Length: 160
Image 1 (cartoon, rainbow, N blue to C red):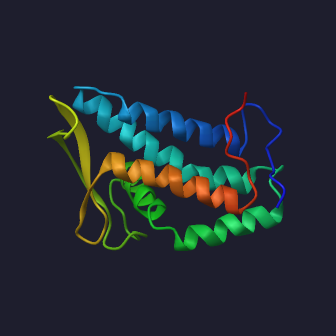
Image 2: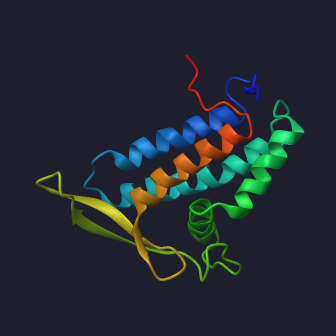
C-alpha cells in the first residue's frame, strides 16, 4: 500500500501526530510539579483524542484511509481510555464512557526501579478497575496510533 503524507505544513493529521509525540516527550520529562505533570498528561490525552478528528478533516487523506482509521478506532484498546480521560477533563462528568465504567485518575509519587529518586506518575483506572500508570497509557496510545496509521497507509515519519 502506498503511504500518504499530508501536504500541509502546520495543519493536517501529521502535524497533530507530531504534537501528540511532543506531548509524550513532555510527560516523560522529569518534573516535581504535580500540577504541570497533570496538565501535560491531560493535554496529551486531548491531543491524542483529537487526532481522529484531524484525520477525518484532512483533505489529503484518502477516503479509504479514513475508513480504515475509523474502523480501527472501534476495536482499539488504549485510545478509548485516553478519550475518556480527555472527555472527563473537559466536561467534568462523563456520561457515556467508552472504556468501561469510565477511566479515573490520581497523581502519585512513585519510585521507578531504574532511578534513585521519586518521580510523578498518574495512576489511571482503565474503566475496569485496573490501575495503570499514565505514562504507560500514553506510550501505548502513541504506539496504537502508529499501527493504525501504518495500516491505513498513512505516514508517521517526522518531517525532515
